[in-house]
Length: 338
Image 1 (tube, rainbow, N blue to C red):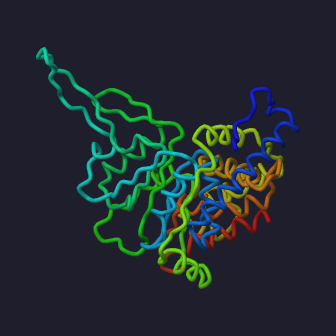
Image 2 (cartoon, rainbow, N blue to C red):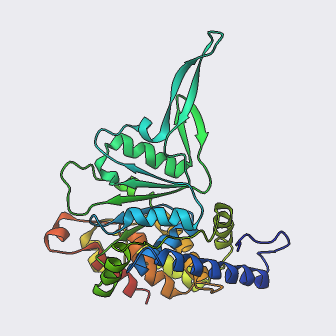
Image 3 (cartoon, one colour):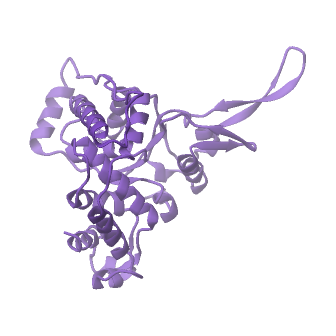
């Protein structure tokens, strides 16, 4: 099975576009089934993760230990045929430990030269485990690679593989010895997905499936070239004017300077920037394509507002003291376009 469009496909033609969207929908459904054999009880996390990959973005997973975040990355690597690596972030982790470094070598003739040794960032799917435990310098090195898709070492640029995605994790409970990501760096993540505990039935499945003699294994459904083709296809999905207006209204209402909502003006310190609008635009296209629809609707905007906006907004100290949460503000934003 391949999702790569045929050479004679014209994505500007609605019939060809719909055919390719149907093909992608079948593939993503197969990928979801394959991942579901290993990851239980997290349908929303899985959907938002797949949307992020299809949109070509990076993901920030927030959840307590033991919720299969590492297993999710390993499974995604298998299902999409991508080279996956994991880096455990610690306070003493240095940029070179992620990006790589140059070493001085001497040839048989005595000539000395530098050779670049690639770091773990040179992969297609990187898990940055507990990213907030590394120093700001190390965080910045990774986030620069995320933004530019290349690394700079000793004045030389080295391009990263394609596709390249980072799935970073954070523990929301233990904050001692951590370096919270600055707002400008959080904005580099396409979505922030909150991973909750599974429900009772899902936890029952986990107990049965993971403590027996045989554990289910994921199988490859797509390859990296298929994913790249899918990411190109997503950008051809048409978006109606009503959806574009809804995205603009939602994002601009989240900024206290331009909001028409009193609670936003009162409680929000700073709101989402243009990158949030871009992310929502790509996300609703990806969600529509995943479900086999030719165009997104306002329901897609409402469904994706929380993961796209929650890490791109900050509340005032007074709002936090009053118990106001970012999610409450996003609910008000959704109400303004519903």
